[in-house]
Image (cartoon, rainbow, N blue to C red; front, side):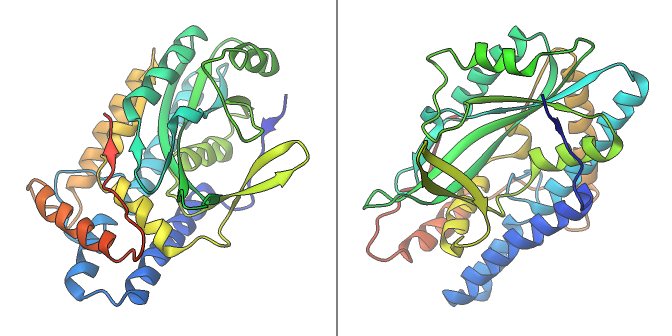
Length: 311
């Protein structure tokens, strides 16, 4: 049972690098396709660098950085209050949540409903977050590229869990399937230091600055995270999805984790409304739909459909 180790860079530094890396891909796309200033301004709004409304978009990179810092503080406070707690990181993947970027269906509600019973069964207090990541070289062959919706949960309990036994039990269920030579549910112990809790907070809120690539190994297909080969067009396609989701809608809790989520939401909402670009307006969904229709028409020879997001 291996603990999640410390990283060379701090969580704050990694969050900034992830934000910069993803924003650079979007900027590269705008330059490559010679977008006008009006469309560039909309990209800035979506990324949290322009005009803001009450909507707290999952595409807002500054908001994600703030979400990381707030959760980190709350977890560190929790550990100081209850030093005997054990912390765990759980990752959830399932084939039903994979979809093509040609006609994408994003199963938000179904993924939440799959994760929640697992955390309840284990009697864990937790905060879970859904993430969308692309696979840049699969399946192709006229079927586009893969988008994977998956989840991470930071969980805590006074009990000591046997991670291997729990994984063997949970992954024996036929309802959890991963076709990429990986366990559908992964459970790891987190050493509850300030650095490690901050890193996990960054990890579950990081923007999609990396892409997965499939490697064909003897044991089967395996995924590897990388920034190499991550096409700006693919990053923009993922951004389209994130711009239609609120960050809070991706976050759930179990048991006493509800108190952490409520306080996280309260602090994040306050910080969002304190930003200089914030106005007490509603998001203009019609204008956003028209924007993405224009962007999709730039995909020559390929018909990309709007996202179907099942909430």
